[in-house]
Structures are given as C-alpha cells and as structure tokens.
Image 1: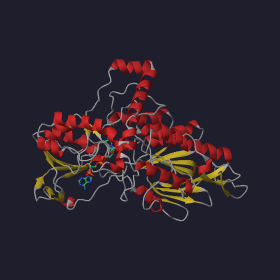
Image 2: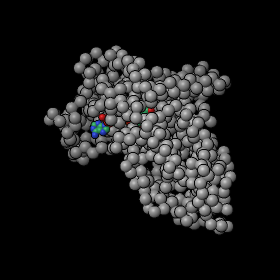
Image 3: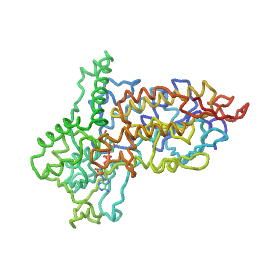
Image 4: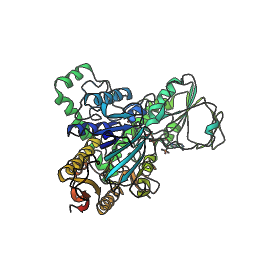
Length: 511
Ligand code: N01
C-alpha cells in the first residue's frame, strides 16, 4: 500500500469514460475531492477511446448523448463520429476539474473488501490504494468477446479487431473479410467495401437496419443553440420522448414494433434489388430483439459488385483465409473481427472479492443481478454504473447521470448518518430481480425469437430495465436506506481510517 494519506481515498472510481467522468464531476460538486479515477488506458474516453475503427459513430443524437451539465452547441453532426465524442470527453474532464484526479495507465487488478476496516483494498498495476467507496464504471462494452476461431493463429494475413483498431495498417486495395454484422460491423463494412479490392462478409445473423437520419448541423443552428440554449434543450427533450415512445413495444407489446419493422423492410427493398441477397439480409426475428441500427451505406455496400455475402457457417481459419462449412476457402489479406463484447461474463468481475474471498462472478452464479443496475448484496460500498439490467431504451449518458445521482445520494446519507458502509439487503435485491424477470418475460428481447448478448448462458436477460427512462430515474432519484444494511460507526464514514474509531461498528437496517 502507498504510504501516507494519499493512499486512502474516500472514493475510488474505476473507468474514465462517460460513467467515471460524470461521477468525478458530481463528487467535486459535493465537495468530495479525496478521490481518484483509475483507467487502464492512456487517455480518457472509455468506449470512445477504445473504439476507433473507421466509421465509428454514435447511434444516438449528440443532443441527448452528452451530459446535461455540459451542452455543446457546436456538434458538427446530429450523430457524432468517434473523434468528436472523444474530444468532448477530454474537454469535459478538463473543464470540470476532473483531469487532476485521473490515474491513467493504472489497471485495477484486484479489489477486496476488508470488513474489519470497512474499506476496499485496491491493487493496481501501478501500486495499491484503500478506499471507503468504490464506483465501478467499467462500461459494458469494454472487453471484446474474441470468440476462438480454429486456425486463426496460422492466418497469413492481418487480423483487425473492431475494439482495438490498428491505424498503422493500410487495407486499401486488399481482399478484406469481415466477421460480424452487429452495430460495429454495420459501420465498418461500407468503409471496407470502399477501400478494399474485394469484401467478403461472413454473416451469421442479419440485423434490422433503419434509414439513417444523420446530417451535418448547419452553422445557423449551432449559433442558435449557442445563443438560445433552450432550443438545444428542446431538441434533447424531443429525442428523449421519441426514444421513450419505443418502450411500450419493446417491453410490453412487441406487436407495436411492426411499423418499425415495415420501415426497415422498405429500406432493404429500396436499397437491395437482388431478391436472393435481400432474403439473406432479412432478419427472421422480431424488430428490436437484437439491437437494430441505422445506416444508408450498409445495404449498398453489401450489394456492391466487389462484395460477397457468405451465410454458410465458418468452419475454420486457414493460412489463406476463411474456410466455410461447404469446404470453400475465401482467400483474404485482412480479416476484421467485429464479433462483440463480453457483456454478462465481464472478466473484471473475477477481480472483485468480498471479505471471504468470494468473487462477484461467483456471487452472481448462475446469472448476474444488481439492484437498480448499481448495487450487489455481499459487496458493501460498491456501486456500479451500467451494471446488470441498467440499460434503458434511451441514451446511456442519461442513464449514467441517473445512476450517479443515486450513488451521490448514498454518499450523502452515509455522511449524514455517520455510516461506514451500505450493503443492499438480499431480500430487497431478490424481490427486485423477480420483478424484473417477470416484466422482461414478455419483452421483445426475451420473446422476439433471437439469440443476443442481452441474454446470458442461462437465458436470463441481464441487460435491460423493463420500463421507461422516467421510471428508472424516479427509482434512482435517491437511495432508500431501508433497502440497505448499514454499518454505523461514531466516526465519519468518509474519512481516513488511520483516525481511530471511538466505538465499534454495529450492523443495522433502517427498515
Ligand atoms: O457486437 P454485437 P457489436 N461466428 O454483439 C457475430 C454498441 N455499439 O460490437 O448475431 C460468426 O452486436 C454476431 O453474430 P450473431 C451497441 O450497443 C454501438 O457490433 O451472434 N459470427 C454479430 O453479428 C451494440 O449493440 C454503436 O449471430 C460471430 C457480431 O459478431 C454493442 O455495442 C456502434 C461469432 C457481434 O455483434 C455491440 O455491438 C458499435 C462467431 N463465432 C457498437 N461471434 C453505435 O452507437 C460473434 N459473431 C453505432
């Protein structure tokens, strides 16, 4: 452990993406400045630092995919590209005083709760710290799934991964193969088709694609947003309401999504003339079951003369390229893997231990669950951002802000009541999980006839909150102490543990 005061933190934040930066900003607002934000990367940005593949773009308009406390009137496009989002996060970090609290290139290797000291012990690649409270803002899409393809190590060409793009490599004029047609693949494929000599797309399951409403934001509108901020707020609210209007179909009555499906079918019909290709690109599951996406360039790229769409399954990778189950070898110079992320089985959860050495992964066996997507029983003073079942059908940034308010309210209550720890009660989390599972059973994600990363190996939907964002925000507005077990010490909860406590701790519940 580091010697001296600097090794003890009131709060350790893990992750310097939208979640970690928002937490840090709000801690500073509350006068809590004894905290650090650890990230394994060399720069802030999280998802928008790691995903730099050609064409990377957010599929939520920037007016809503940005912090409420940091509006940016001069977004260049309705749907920003990765570099603009990355710059935005760096600027927010600087403007709101977060940057001095960053510890970049610090990978958290182990987190263990020390019950007798009522604090977390953190081991990082650069040293050790202790913290009263930990906020895990690791991001659900921070660990590539990397499915194993037999023979990939013998491939003579270059392998590019969507989540870790190597910009030093040039793919122009090459024979490119892409595995994966989810949101990342849909954005990479048009770029690969335009740059490559040929493109082979290995599609396991097609995605529903909507016409893309993206456009540049003209100068006069940027000026208007600058001079009359209420106009940008009005745009933000209208996007928020448009997304909320999808919730009844997604959660309660999937038949309401038929209209969206019809729009997607029409988009496909307009852009792909060949009936055989059109058939191959038509999903056989309900709209919304897997994440639908937007693109005006994807279908033209799939229908281009230098593209072949291969639906035959992949048998193995051979030195020349990809061999499919029909015995064909598709010769390639570059193989792009856009094969998704470990969402349910994120390896970070193996590194988090309770005071008996039980990991969060073990605690969550067979399926992960979390109260308000934030708190797990058995792990006091650990609050997560975008944990299990925290996805609400809106911008993840507004969900993050709601969760951060919940965490801030927990810290306030700890301070107010002199608590050294809070741990969600098992009966509360069980009832919450049962409620969620019941509501999710009829959702399109569970019943729409697809396999997706929303469902874990046991078929539990570990991704979604079944309701409107407004419902989620109301429930996370403030922590209810009755939902938590607390440890009560006479000492201040957010303090240096080297200060001796005047009396022992006692466990209590506020119910
Ligand atoms: O990952 P995915 P992603 N053999 O899991 C295929 C966010 N995001 O990185 O569908 C062959 O969606 C897999 O096939 P199948 C967004 O939330 C947002 O694209 O499982 N294929 C699928 O086609 C998104 O949902 C943005 O049959 C294999 C693909 O790989 C999330 O990130 C942009 C395979 C994986 O798709 C993840 O998106 C990008 C195998 N062994 C990402 N294994 C925007 O905001 C997997 N596949 C625009």
